[in-house]
Length: 282
Image (cartoon, rainbow, N blue to C red; front, side, top):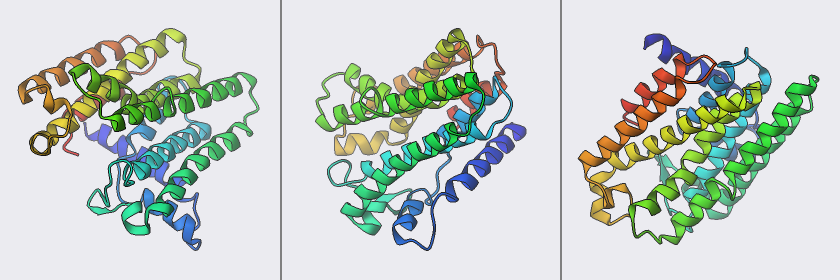
């Protein structure tokens, strides 16, 4: 596990070096953009993309660019999540959110810019590719990422969440499979897709990613179980006891384990990642 944690830290450092180089600290607006991802964060989705790529292919600067772009997409969604029309939260990770620090209108623009810059980073990276096969993979991956971050994934999940039309457990599962699991799929399947992995491997990885994303959300709901019940927020806590939540998390992790062991690429990181996630406290 020590080597695994070191790998996580190395990947995080690599991603953050690129991430923080995008914006100029001397420009006020760009500084607001940089602030959005300066409040901490594990860079999990970006790391998953990078490691998925490395499961099938050697290291590539293109993979780093795509991973950082995914991190920008994730951060834009967090900036917009905090807005009054959504979660109305002036704090994130114990610090003022972009909305809390710079105001509502600036937060809207910062989120917009992060999303735009993710596309700019990917397009710039694609323009440098000479190999035709790799170029096709990159274009396919870009389309896959933005499809899952939009109306067929994360944005649609947020839409259903805001409607708050939750009457049964399946409604929660539908929201989380879109809002949370979509970017896990974009990361895990996307990284392998960029590498040129076969369709069978992509299918196993999609199952793994969906299970991992759902498990991640269930853990979050378990962390906030008592508070969510107190404020009557509709989450898994509304429908399941803590014991049943823990059982469901185990079932999802077991299924993820069964799927990752079927891929033809390197499995070690993703096997260990299941255990890492199961023991997380963040």
